[in-house]
Length: 134
Figure 1 (cartoon, rainbow, N blue to C red):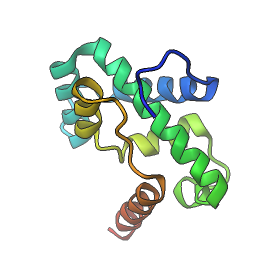
Figure 2: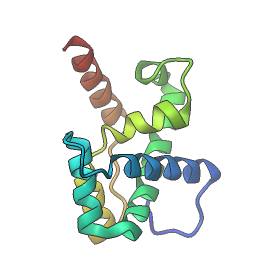
Figure 3: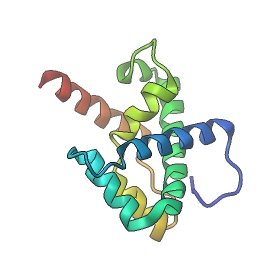
């Protein structure tokens, strides 16, 4: 998967727009949480145009994980059966992406960085279990 292509599916486009919306919500200097601090730093370092390309790559990662979950049945472990893609699944994945690695690869590498779906799913499930236990 590379962000350096001309054609994206409708689903990849929707996912990318969900990512950009998530990024805009967290691009807030008045917030002190780590997600917002990271997002503000990324927008400052790379600019809005680059962040759109980063969102496109993240959208493809989200679609890849979603498709993996559909095949393996992992979706319900992440957000529940009655959830939606745009309000639940995509933002949940955004919360777990390694934004620094993604941005660095997107802007200075081949634009193909993506976590392996099975490993990424396991990491998300483990982190969510820790959050619930806390």
